[in-house]
Image 1 (cartoon, rainbow, N blue to C red):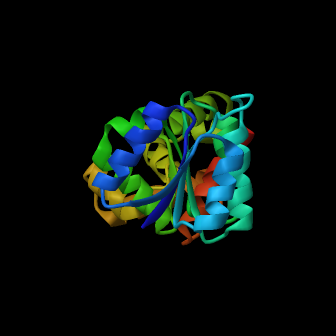
Image 2 (image 1 turned 45 degrees about the horizontal axis):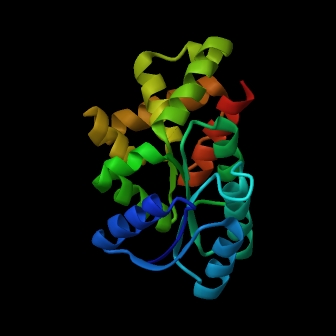
Length: 216
């Protein structure tokens, strides 16, 4: 799998490259700013882009803007955006574009190399990955301000969070030691409580949950 990395800190950029190459990815280019990142993607046409949100010159949201533009210009390229801090609005803006092949994780997730690489593969394969800390903030806010979310059982809120992370029913079942049938029942009750339509498309169900949580 061909990858382009966007990261202005040289040590982290080289570290990411090493982690990805040892995980079987082919890093075809690296970039230290958003302009160079977009140019590298246009030239290399990678399967996956991994980029920091904050890049030169202002170190605000250049990486995010570049990621959204890359998704628009190169629909077949998956994008994983990394952030130092929880930025709920950035996550929602990124995931609201198009279909799957997108992820938003905190940089601290790189320390768990196997899980990080699995998340990259899931996104490259067309899935969605949203950092658990971002989801936890959204669910906590919603449970305080929205009666429908607050009425969910602790288990249902747990399932809701995992759905928002982009996890499949099979993954949720294994993580919570449940049957897939039980997970389906939980998600059905969650959708009913939140007034959301049931959707078999993984990314659309993530979007539906995120939009609901974000509006609260």
